[in-house]
Amino acid sequence: METVLSGIRPTGNLHLGNYFGAVQNFIKMQESYNCFFFIADWHSLTTHPTPQDLHNNVTQILAEYLACGIDPEKATLYVQSEVPEIAELYLLLNMNAYVGELERTTTFKDKVRAQPENVNAGLLTYPVLQTADIIIHKATKVPVGKDQEQNVEIARKYARRFNQMYNVDCFPEPMPFNFGENLVKIPGLDGSGKMGKSEGNGIFLYEDAESIRKKVMRAVTDAGPQAPNSEVSEPIQNLFTIMKSVSQPDTLQYFTEAYANCTIRYGDLKKQLAEDIIAFTTPFKQKIEDIKANKKYLHDVVQLGTHKARESASKTLQEVRSVIGFRQW
Figure 1 (cartoon, rainbow, N blue to C red):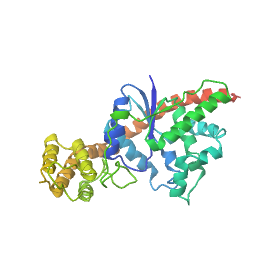
Figure 2: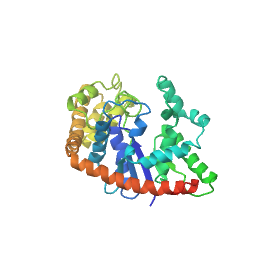
Figure 3: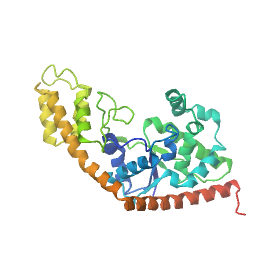
Figure 4: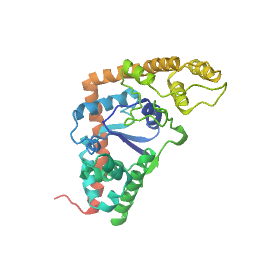
């Protein structure tokens, strides 16, 4: 059974794009792959070195994953900082990672431009820690977006470099996995592009109803159809795409036909879409609150995930230490 690994930073909630996209595929993958899903709290410190409430941020994301359907019995769901073996492998890999190649990575250069006052060593060696996350479980598939494919390529390079330096076949070379046609892409509310955390164009699963209404009513539209059966503009098509995911088919059909015959009123469309989003997200919000309130369940989930992740990681680390030449005294 192939091993899949994916992580998420505890610096933002899951939005509709996450849920209909990657998370739905994770739920399917946990049935047929050996899945490792982790909360990347160490990674979050590269851009948020002094988080206001790191533990509660981790708890929130963990509860959201569980509410969406990630099963801790089927997949290994864990918190990165609870697995110290990752940090040791990260240290060992850093000995064979070179400053020049790290400085040339696209993500590092982008972050330097975005946060010139906080160019820390963790930011520079982010791909090395990401490599450790992946290869410590000998993952062969890594679900990533296009912007992260270079870091998976770096992980492939470091896995290959270790194997060649020590003349072993220790690590498989991981491959990026983007789900292909199976990935549903939910657009944002700003008229173009996909829904995202940093873009400010998303609707979150844990969002309150009034905030959802305000966001949807501010969504970008156009001047309206100029003739019957005219081509649907991108901003309106985006709203229809979201509606297709959260509304009843007859609701989508009603507004699609109204657009085609030039009788559509965007205010009515937005009001209906907002209420349908609220109806869709409310059960998730309740599940998340129930899970967060059940401290024992969360503790048990973390303990189970930590046990499974450390069992896997320790086997790999013992092999790595032996290959390099470390011995028990």
